[in-house]
Amino acid sequence: MSTDRTRMFRSVAAYAVLIAGALLTVAPLVLSALTAVKTPARFAVESPLALPNPVTADNFRIVLDQGLGRAVLVTALMTVFITGGQLITSTLAAYAFARTEFPGREALFWAYLVTMMIPPVVTLIPLYLMFAKLGALNTFWALVLPFVFGSPYAIFLLRQYFRAIPGELIGAARLDGASTLDVIVHVVVPMSRPVLATLTLITIVSQWNNFLWPLVASSGRTWQVLTVATANLQTQYNAQWTLVMAATTLAIVPLVVLFLVFQRQVLRSIAWSGVK
Image (cartoon, rainbow, N blue to C red):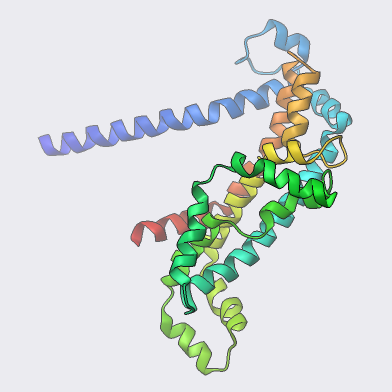
Protein backbone atom coordinates (compact mmCIF):
# COMPACT_ATOMS: atom_id res chain seq x y z
CA MET A 1 0.00 0.00 0.00
CA SER A 2 2.85 2.36 0.82
CA THR A 3 4.36 1.71 -2.60
CA ASP A 4 1.07 2.60 -4.29
CA ARG A 5 0.80 5.79 -2.26
CA THR A 6 4.37 6.74 -3.13
CA ARG A 7 3.66 6.25 -6.82
CA MET A 8 0.46 8.27 -6.58
CA PHE A 9 2.28 11.06 -4.74
CA ARG A 10 5.00 11.13 -7.39
CA SER A 11 2.42 11.24 -10.17
CA VAL A 12 0.51 14.07 -8.51
CA ALA A 13 3.73 15.99 -7.91
CA ALA A 14 4.85 15.49 -11.53
CA TYR A 15 1.51 16.67 -12.91
CA ALA A 16 1.54 19.66 -10.55
CA VAL A 17 4.97 20.70 -11.83
CA LEU A 18 3.88 20.23 -15.45
CA ILE A 19 0.69 22.24 -14.93
CA ALA A 20 2.64 25.03 -13.22
CA GLY A 21 5.13 25.10 -16.10
CA ALA A 22 2.31 25.17 -18.64
CA LEU A 23 0.63 28.07 -16.84
CA LEU A 24 3.88 30.04 -16.70
CA THR A 25 4.37 29.46 -20.43
CA VAL A 26 0.82 30.24 -21.54
CA ALA A 27 0.10 33.13 -19.16
CA PRO A 28 2.14 35.78 -21.08
CA LEU A 29 0.43 34.79 -24.33
CA VAL A 30 -3.04 35.04 -22.77
CA LEU A 31 -2.17 38.37 -21.15
CA SER A 32 -0.94 39.70 -24.49
CA ALA A 33 -4.15 38.66 -26.26
CA LEU A 34 -6.36 40.14 -23.51
CA THR A 35 -4.49 43.44 -23.59
CA ALA A 36 -4.65 43.59 -27.40
CA VAL A 37 -8.47 43.65 -27.42
CA LYS A 38 -8.85 46.26 -24.67
CA THR A 39 -9.35 49.97 -25.17
CA PRO A 40 -6.49 52.15 -23.85
CA ALA A 41 -8.87 53.83 -21.40
CA ARG A 42 -10.02 50.54 -19.87
CA PHE A 43 -6.47 49.21 -19.73
CA ALA A 44 -5.35 52.31 -17.82
CA VAL A 45 -7.90 51.88 -15.02
CA GLU A 46 -8.33 48.08 -14.81
CA SER A 47 -6.13 45.27 -13.64
CA PRO A 48 -4.10 43.70 -16.49
CA LEU A 49 -5.80 40.39 -15.64
CA ALA A 50 -9.33 41.79 -16.03
CA LEU A 51 -11.37 40.51 -18.95
CA PRO A 52 -11.79 43.06 -21.77
CA ASN A 53 -15.09 44.91 -21.69
CA PRO A 54 -15.81 46.01 -24.34
CA VAL A 55 -13.79 43.95 -26.80
CA THR A 56 -12.26 46.09 -29.55
CA ALA A 57 -10.26 45.43 -32.71
CA ASP A 58 -9.14 49.03 -33.10
CA ASN A 59 -5.65 48.25 -31.83
CA PHE A 60 -5.10 45.75 -34.64
CA ARG A 61 -6.42 48.21 -37.21
CA ILE A 62 -4.05 50.94 -35.99
CA VAL A 63 -0.92 48.77 -36.06
CA LEU A 64 -1.82 47.40 -39.49
CA ASP A 65 -2.27 50.94 -40.77
CA GLN A 66 1.21 51.74 -39.44
CA GLY A 67 2.79 49.24 -41.86
CA LEU A 68 2.65 46.06 -39.81
CA GLY A 69 0.58 44.35 -42.51
CA ARG A 70 3.40 44.74 -45.03
CA ALA A 71 5.89 43.52 -42.45
CA VAL A 72 3.81 40.37 -41.97
CA LEU A 73 3.82 39.71 -45.72
CA VAL A 74 7.58 40.29 -45.99
CA THR A 75 8.22 38.00 -43.03
CA ALA A 76 5.95 35.30 -44.42
CA LEU A 77 7.63 35.46 -47.84
CA MET A 78 11.10 35.36 -46.28
CA THR A 79 10.16 32.44 -44.01
CA VAL A 80 8.62 30.37 -46.81
CA PHE A 81 11.62 30.94 -49.08
CA ILE A 82 14.19 30.08 -46.39
CA THR A 83 12.24 27.07 -45.11
CA GLY A 84 11.87 25.60 -48.60
CA GLY A 85 15.53 26.18 -49.39
CA GLN A 86 16.70 24.69 -46.11
CA LEU A 87 14.55 21.60 -46.47
CA ILE A 88 15.80 20.89 -49.99
CA THR A 89 19.50 21.59 -49.43
CA SER A 90 19.61 20.00 -45.97
CA THR A 91 17.93 16.84 -47.26
CA LEU A 92 20.43 16.48 -50.09
CA ALA A 93 23.42 17.21 -47.86
CA ALA A 94 22.21 14.92 -45.07
CA TYR A 95 21.70 12.05 -47.53
CA ALA A 96 25.22 12.54 -48.85
CA PHE A 97 26.67 12.44 -45.35
CA ALA A 98 24.52 9.48 -44.31
CA ARG A 99 24.45 7.20 -47.36
CA THR A 100 27.17 8.25 -49.80
CA GLU A 101 30.79 7.15 -49.46
CA PHE A 102 33.44 9.70 -50.44
CA PRO A 103 36.91 10.58 -49.11
CA GLY A 104 36.89 12.79 -46.05
CA ARG A 105 33.15 12.45 -45.47
CA GLU A 106 33.32 12.22 -41.68
CA ALA A 107 35.95 14.92 -41.33
CA LEU A 108 33.94 17.28 -43.54
CA PHE A 109 30.74 16.55 -41.65
CA TRP A 110 32.22 17.20 -38.22
CA ALA A 111 34.06 20.29 -39.44
CA TYR A 112 30.76 21.65 -40.72
CA LEU A 113 29.01 20.70 -37.49
CA VAL A 114 31.56 22.67 -35.46
CA THR A 115 30.17 25.85 -37.00
CA MET A 116 27.15 25.40 -34.70
CA MET A 117 29.43 26.58 -31.89
CA ILE A 118 30.08 29.94 -33.56
CA PRO A 119 27.76 32.69 -32.24
CA PRO A 120 25.81 34.37 -35.08
CA VAL A 121 27.04 37.79 -33.95
CA VAL A 122 30.59 36.78 -34.94
CA THR A 123 29.60 36.48 -38.62
CA LEU A 124 27.38 39.56 -38.58
CA ILE A 125 30.01 42.10 -39.68
CA PRO A 126 31.55 39.89 -42.42
CA LEU A 127 28.07 39.20 -43.81
CA TYR A 128 27.23 42.88 -43.75
CA LEU A 129 30.45 43.79 -45.58
CA MET A 130 29.85 41.08 -48.20
CA PHE A 131 26.35 42.29 -49.00
CA ALA A 132 27.47 45.92 -48.89
CA LYS A 133 30.16 45.18 -51.52
CA LEU A 134 27.55 43.42 -53.66
CA GLY A 135 25.14 46.33 -53.29
CA ALA A 136 22.50 43.91 -52.00
CA LEU A 137 21.67 45.53 -48.66
CA ASN A 138 18.03 46.44 -48.11
CA THR A 139 16.87 43.81 -50.61
CA PHE A 140 14.93 40.58 -50.28
CA TRP A 141 18.07 38.57 -51.14
CA ALA A 142 19.93 40.10 -48.23
CA LEU A 143 17.28 38.67 -45.92
CA VAL A 144 17.25 35.12 -47.28
CA LEU A 145 20.64 34.21 -48.78
CA PRO A 146 22.55 33.82 -45.47
CA PHE A 147 20.03 31.19 -44.30
CA VAL A 148 18.62 29.46 -47.36
CA PHE A 149 21.37 26.90 -47.98
CA GLY A 150 20.75 24.59 -45.06
CA SER A 151 22.02 24.72 -41.50
CA PRO A 152 24.33 22.49 -39.42
CA TYR A 153 21.51 21.57 -37.05
CA ALA A 154 19.14 20.58 -39.86
CA ILE A 155 21.77 18.49 -41.63
CA PHE A 156 22.77 16.77 -38.39
CA LEU A 157 19.15 15.97 -37.49
CA LEU A 158 18.32 14.59 -40.94
CA ARG A 159 21.59 12.64 -41.19
CA GLN A 160 20.85 10.79 -37.97
CA TYR A 161 17.35 9.97 -39.19
CA PHE A 162 18.51 8.84 -42.63
CA ARG A 163 21.09 6.50 -41.12
CA ALA A 164 18.28 4.64 -39.34
CA ILE A 165 16.44 3.87 -42.59
CA PRO A 166 16.98 0.18 -43.49
CA GLY A 167 19.60 -0.17 -46.18
CA GLU A 168 17.58 -2.99 -47.78
CA LEU A 169 14.92 -0.50 -48.90
CA ILE A 170 17.48 1.71 -50.60
CA GLY A 171 19.18 -1.34 -52.10
CA ALA A 172 15.86 -2.59 -53.49
CA ALA A 173 15.22 0.77 -55.09
CA ARG A 174 18.68 0.69 -56.64
CA LEU A 175 17.97 -2.76 -58.10
CA ASP A 176 14.82 -1.34 -59.69
CA GLY A 177 16.96 1.22 -61.47
CA ALA A 178 16.29 4.21 -59.23
CA SER A 179 18.80 7.02 -59.33
CA THR A 180 20.06 8.77 -56.20
CA LEU A 181 17.50 11.53 -56.63
CA ASP A 182 14.73 8.93 -57.10
CA VAL A 183 15.80 7.19 -53.89
CA ILE A 184 15.70 10.47 -51.97
CA VAL A 185 12.33 11.59 -53.37
CA HIS A 186 10.47 8.26 -53.38
CA VAL A 187 12.04 6.34 -50.48
CA VAL A 188 13.87 8.59 -48.01
CA VAL A 189 11.57 11.62 -47.92
CA PRO A 190 8.28 9.66 -47.48
CA MET A 191 9.84 7.70 -44.61
CA SER A 192 11.13 10.90 -42.99
CA ARG A 193 7.92 12.92 -42.82
CA PRO A 194 7.88 13.23 -39.00
CA VAL A 195 11.41 14.63 -38.76
CA LEU A 196 10.87 16.84 -41.81
CA ALA A 197 7.71 18.24 -40.23
CA THR A 198 9.63 18.93 -37.02
CA LEU A 199 12.44 20.58 -38.95
CA THR A 200 9.91 22.66 -40.88
CA LEU A 201 8.36 23.91 -37.67
CA ILE A 202 11.75 24.69 -36.08
CA THR A 203 12.91 26.57 -39.18
CA ILE A 204 9.70 28.57 -39.48
CA VAL A 205 9.82 29.61 -35.82
CA SER A 206 13.50 30.58 -35.95
CA GLN A 207 13.13 32.62 -39.14
CA TRP A 208 9.82 34.20 -38.14
CA ASN A 209 11.50 35.43 -34.95
CA ASN A 210 14.77 36.43 -36.61
CA PHE A 211 15.65 39.96 -35.55
CA LEU A 212 19.34 40.86 -35.56
CA TRP A 213 20.26 40.21 -39.20
CA PRO A 214 17.07 41.76 -40.69
CA LEU A 215 17.66 44.80 -38.48
CA VAL A 216 21.18 45.21 -39.90
CA ALA A 217 20.48 44.18 -43.50
CA SER A 218 17.42 46.34 -44.17
CA SER A 219 16.33 49.89 -43.53
CA GLY A 220 13.04 51.65 -44.09
CA ARG A 221 9.72 49.86 -44.43
CA THR A 222 10.17 48.22 -47.83
CA TRP A 223 11.81 45.02 -46.52
CA GLN A 224 11.14 45.46 -42.83
CA VAL A 225 10.27 42.19 -41.09
CA LEU A 226 7.75 41.69 -38.32
CA THR A 227 10.20 41.59 -35.41
CA VAL A 228 11.86 44.86 -36.46
CA ALA A 229 8.50 46.51 -37.15
CA THR A 230 7.23 45.48 -33.71
CA ALA A 231 10.34 46.89 -32.03
CA ASN A 232 9.95 50.17 -33.92
CA LEU A 233 6.27 50.26 -33.02
CA GLN A 234 7.12 49.87 -29.36
CA THR A 235 9.47 52.85 -29.64
CA GLN A 236 6.92 54.91 -31.56
CA TYR A 237 4.03 54.16 -29.20
CA ASN A 238 5.91 54.22 -25.92
CA ALA A 239 3.71 53.06 -23.01
CA GLN A 240 0.72 52.44 -25.31
CA TRP A 241 0.66 48.79 -24.37
CA THR A 242 -2.60 47.93 -26.09
CA LEU A 243 -1.01 48.70 -29.47
CA VAL A 244 2.23 46.91 -28.61
CA MET A 245 0.33 43.82 -27.45
CA ALA A 246 -1.77 43.88 -30.62
CA ALA A 247 1.41 43.73 -32.69
CA THR A 248 2.81 40.99 -30.47
CA THR A 249 -0.39 38.96 -30.78
CA LEU A 250 -0.29 39.23 -34.56
CA ALA A 251 3.25 37.88 -34.47
CA ILE A 252 2.36 34.95 -32.20
CA VAL A 253 -0.87 33.69 -33.77
CA PRO A 254 0.67 32.18 -36.97
CA LEU A 255 3.20 30.22 -34.89
CA VAL A 256 0.48 28.82 -32.62
CA VAL A 257 -1.56 27.75 -35.65
CA LEU A 258 1.48 26.05 -37.18
CA PHE A 259 2.16 24.12 -34.00
CA LEU A 260 -1.43 22.91 -33.86
CA VAL A 261 -1.13 21.74 -37.47
CA PHE A 262 2.22 19.98 -37.02
CA GLN A 263 1.89 18.76 -33.43
CA ARG A 264 1.17 15.14 -34.36
CA GLN A 265 4.23 14.95 -36.59
CA VAL A 266 6.36 16.60 -33.91
CA LEU A 267 5.22 14.09 -31.30
CA ARG A 268 5.93 11.21 -33.67
CA SER A 269 9.42 12.56 -34.23
CA ILE A 270 10.03 12.91 -30.48
CA ALA A 271 8.74 9.37 -29.91
CA TRP A 272 11.11 8.05 -32.60
CA SER A 273 14.03 9.90 -31.02
CA GLY A 274 13.16 8.44 -27.62
CA VAL A 275 13.05 4.89 -28.98
CA LYS A 276 16.41 5.36 -30.70
